[in-house]
Length: 246
Image (cartoon, rainbow, N blue to C red):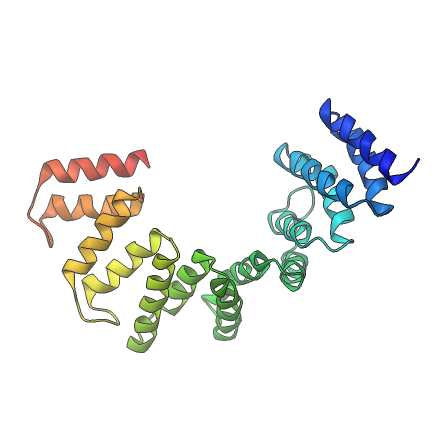
């Protein structure tokens, strides 16, 4: 049976939701060089992944990764990191994330940096490595990368906190709502920047309006205690309720 025939058969199996047979046909078609089958096998892999059939998902992703799919490397990394269908293996997860990055998926750089975070809080050399990976992701407009660089830089050194604020502000420009909360904290306490309650409150209100539960909780506390704002139990109650809803 030709690659084209196997591809069509795989399509037919997908149409009737027989993904196991679809996987068999499409895998063979991919091995024989069908790009259309590769795209469809990716969809089948995602179906298996969503339904937690990790063994079959891994089989699909591995076939695609062996043929250059950066996204498949990323998902294989997730499975190693989280122990989905296999033992957790952080080292192998890192290798897959690195491979995804090398093949052009900047999410691989972000996930590599995130994988280093637990040790980055304890060891300076790991922190430096994590920040370098996250900077690559930040340059690709991954807002959470900018936020986590900011968090890693927050310490008792004023220059570091000033740099952290710039990363939070970059994350905000990239669309990250939670970074508004972290930036507001620096402005409220005058850490790494001159104290500016007005800017801090503006950021908190913007984050709360965007649905950030942490911002809502903080505003609830401020209105309940009358700190930085006029004491207002109704406003406090509103923000506490909104924090619970988010």
